[in-house]
Length: 429
Ligand code: KE4
Image (cartoon, rainbow, N blue to C red; front, side):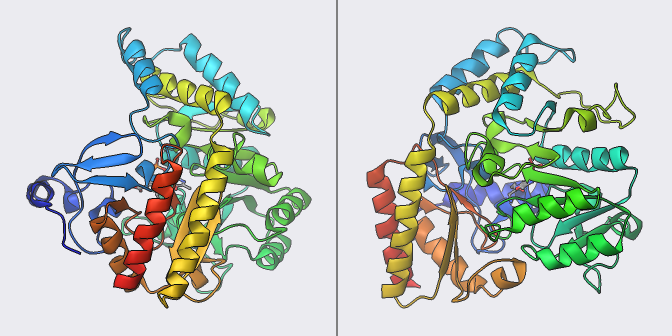
C-alpha cells in the first residue's frame, strides 16, 4: 500500500515546531505514539476529514468526541453565524444561556443546577473544588488510566501503596497538590471500600463512567452501583466525568444508560456542539456552594459564550429531534464484530471493547478491564495498524490508549468499507 502524498502536512509540521511546542496545540495530536508526522487538516465534511494535501479520511476521532453528527453540521453552522451577527461575547448574561441550562438540567439525571465553562478541564477542576468546598474534606479518589483534564490536582498517579499519597503525573505539579489525590485501579470496588472505611477525609470519588482515556473500558457490572452505595454510606460525593460520554452514550449520557446518578457531573465535547464549551452540574444544594451564592469561587470571561451556547443548543435540539443512538449502536456493534473476525482470520490477537459509539481495538489477547490490562497491549502493533488504516483513508485516534468516536454521518456502506479496510490492515501488519 503506497503512502499518500502528505508533503504539505510535513511542511506545516516542520514550520509549526518552530513556534509551537511539538508543533501541536495538544500533545496527542503529534502522532508520537503511532509514528509519522501528524496530519494538518484543511476542512471537515460530514463523515470526512480532508487534509491540506487533499487526502480524505473517514473520521473515527470526531475531534475526540464532540462531532457525533460529523463535521460542519449545517444547522450548527447556521446557528453560530446567526449568533455571531449579534456579537461574539458580552461578558454578561443572555436568555440563551438560561434556555440552554434548562435543557441540560432536563436532559441529565441528577443535574438540578449547572455552570457553563469553556473546557472539560475547567469543568472537572471545578466540580472537584465544589466537592471539597461542600464537604469540607480534602482528599479525592480517582482511578488509574482515567483522565479528567490537566488541572494540577488531577494530574496525579498512584503513590507507592495504592491508597498512599498521590504523586505528580506531570512535571511542574507540586507533590503537595497531588498528595491529596488517591489513585485506585478502575473497576476495583473492594479497593474503594477499604479506602473509604479507613479514611474519613475523602471529599469525593471521581471517574470516567466509561473510560476513554485508557482506551474504551466499561464499568464492570455492579461497579457504578457499588460506588454509589459506598459513597452514600461514607458521606463522600460521587463525581461522574461525562466529558466524553455525556450526550454520547444516551441523551442523558452514561448516567441515563447505566441508571446510577452521581452528586455532580462534568460535561464537555458534544454539549458544546464543537465549540469551546463545557459544564459542571448536579444537586442544587451542592451547586449553591458556588460563587456568588456560596463560598466556592469559579469564574470565566467566556463562560456561556453566545456562539458556543448557540452551537450547544442546536446540537441538543438535533439529539432530541433525531436521536443517533440506535443507529450508532447497531452500526458500531456490527463494525466491532467484523473487526474481531478480521483480526482473527489474520491471526492478530486483539480485544475490541465497545460501549455505544465508543470503541478501542486493543492489541492484546487479554480482556481489558483496567489500565494494567490495557497496558498489556502491543503499542507498536497498534501504531502499525493505525498507519495502515490511515494510508487507506480511515483516521483512528493516534494512540492505543484512546477511544474511537463513531459518528452518525458515516453511512452503513462506509461502516462496511471501514471493516473491509481493517481486514486489509490486519493482514498487512
Ligand atoms: P478538555 O480540557 O480537553 O476539553 O477536556 C478534558 C477532559 C476531561 N475529561 C475527560 C473524560 C476527557 O476525555 C477530557 C479530554 N479528552 C482528551 C482525549 N483523551 C482530549 C484530547 C486532547 O487532549 O487533545
